[in-house]
Length: 274
Image (cartoon, rainbow, N blue to C red; front, side, top):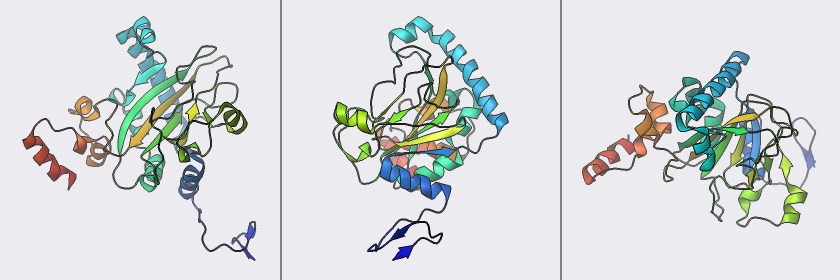
């Protein structure tokens, strides 16, 4: 009989096993097995307060710019698209070191930021993320390693009363959406402290819960994908004039823009191989 170094777990007949000693290793193991985990962001209370305040300010400005009725008519209400284009604190969220380290161990090779969205789960209303879905919707396949990872930053605490995210564990390993009976028996609601990231394999089925509290629940969603997948919004085009570090430009897809000509394609080959 063998045991772990701490002596807590006994086993026999085991020739191979995972060793997860650090927070990052534990998170990676959980995502591979269950399809999700919760990790700390490492941000200070002051940084969390700033994100909360800037979120509300930007959402108000965004709604004024596009019109509340217009956004609701096209099912874009309760959403703030690509806030990193307007405020550096959201750019910093997208390059969070804990998130990037986990994704670098899950996605084989290069990956880019595909999208960032501020999301509001409103009190007592139908939530447009409240239906079960994958973050690669309409896809029914599984892959041996992830093609896309979702990192949902909790601006507010996620709890049972304010509609914390529901996940179907290990559903990233099966092609079809399961039956009602299976869902009701196996879904879990993921509680997380404000300032945490809920990290999910994008092929795991999940949904937002019903917000029964007295306050809107806010989050900032990030999806990281292999470069083959088209960005939701052309981030390099939007940020082209911004002075960015080369590593951030790589993460934001500057090397993987769609060439507009044969000459541009040939030139892009040099960038990719750098």
